[in-house]
Length: 110
Image 1 (tube, rainbow, N blue to C red):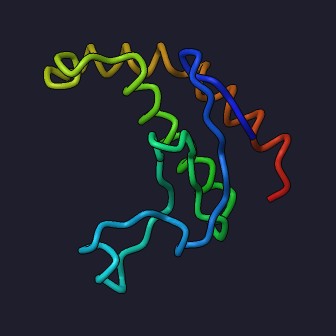
Image 2: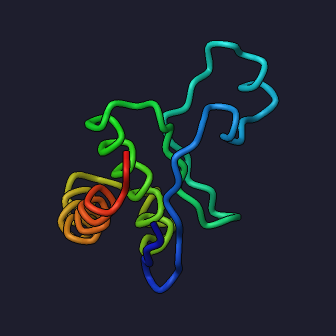
């Protein structure tokens, strides 16, 4: 499924573990496991396809927060995070992220 945040289009895909991009160190650790990954270079949100649906939902929300933060936050704001800023991020991103997650799970065969 494709979606836009701040007029940039991304695609959500479900993948096997071997499709995630791992650092050399991560790839050498046989216990290293990813649930999700956001690829800003290819505009893809990758979710591990074998996760239970509840964990897929949480993982997708987590990955979408990476996109939201990169799209709407400045480095200065991120460096100075406090409770008020975190509450603003949550309040401002809630509808955007929940709408994408809802649409994804309504339109996708799991």
